[in-house]
Image (tube, rainbow, N blue to C red; front, side, top):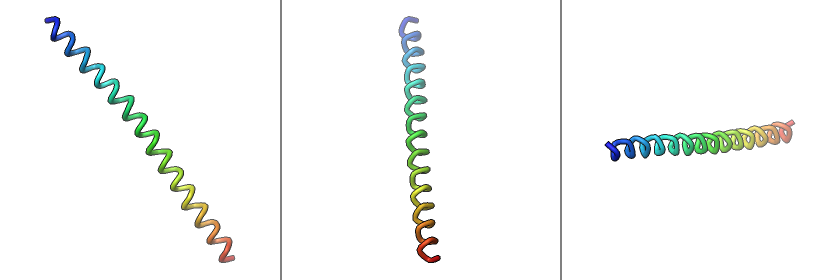
Length: 52
């Protein structure tokens, strides 16, 4: 019974850590996505301005 409780706690801990890591990864992914998008936009803007 004691082992069962321990297992339950460890599983909950693992799930929580996984969620935390997932959130961090998601944040990093979003930051990278936004930065690349901004870079592409700025490059296109400069090209557009140079053409004009």
